[in-house]
Length: 160
Image (cartoon, rainbow, N blue to C red):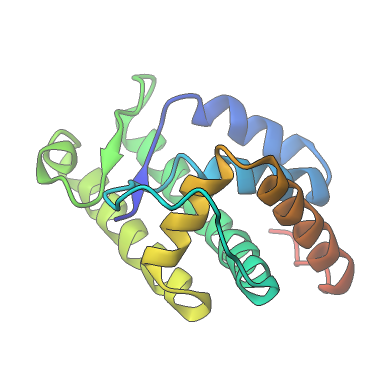
């Protein structure tokens, strides 16, 4: 299930906002590896992935990123200068550790992220790819290349 990890998110958020969109995308793809919980079994040593799955994975990451940034900023405003605790979507104890308004934001983020992922790929497959990319440099390179290609072919996003 989907999680929001706050550890080091402030620094990464500042990096994302201060770098060009391509670098932000690369950072986002790396960041997503900390966004999902892996309750699935270990993937076999040979990881088979289709090009369309790589593309869809990156599309999901790119579409989730603004939602993640917004949720993080809203939770940060509520909590203030305190560190934002780790929030695990399927763990009610971690959600209950947040103030009520922040709980609502975290739950909304989790629901939106799952909906976004499901537009492109199953949540289970997304999690498998995320887990595999942490240890598979070939997959990391494929995701990086796909993110660059999508950035080249996608129209620029309007700035806020």
